[in-house]
Length: 309
Image 1 (cartoon, one colour):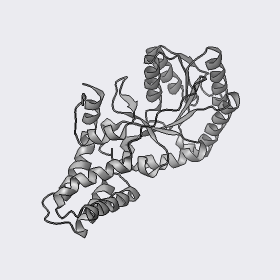
Image 2 (tube, one colour):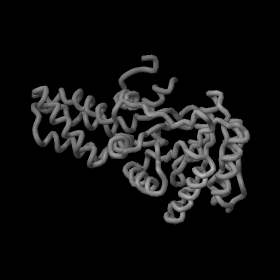
Image 3 (spheres, helix red, strand yellow):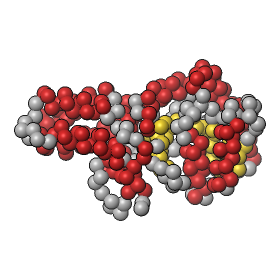
């Protein structure tokens, strides 16, 4: 089974809460009235699309209906899908790279979102492309985080820079940048702490790590990737705001799409945040983390095509 088929499968729960419920709004009605638009907005908000995006989508559907002089509710399915595609855009935004090397990617996010696993899978993907990768165990507050990253490093077959638990994350970042340079690595992936119960301290730590990386290598980090758990729905949006206040988040990796009915949140993130979704995770397999493609996402959500199309 190819990635597109797995993506389609992983969006089954979202399809049930999103596509099917929206289709129900358009089915069995004679005409198009205000009640229909209100119901559509309500379904979208319940599907974690968010209030702003829901209102925007409904407004675009209204205009589409007027422009085409559509009278039958059944024709709204196609109009809705077109407007959803328009809002999501078709632009695929890749991870930033440093052609001079190494590319330094700082990975941030709260504990439990799949941050370390995302780093491991990214390392695997880069290694598959023939790149030399180094991992940096920057979450020094949890021994388990260091151990987990080390297991990934062994599994993928890449180097890891680590200090002992409780050590200074800034020192790990410093050593990692210098190691990446001296060992002529192509990519350096820096793990970071994610304890939100002490938010101000955590954000100070992230700022400090960012500052050290930038000082030791001008232009770095080339990507600050925020990992979000799709199952948290609208809560994911508030995390974007929190982390963006501390560091300049340049991209989002959305994990656990296979375990949620809240895949509608992807629409909210893409349309409400000025930060592109760059990667999506749809399962446990090594190759279940891929670049985000809005067109593929919508086609998979609607169960439209097969892998080879």
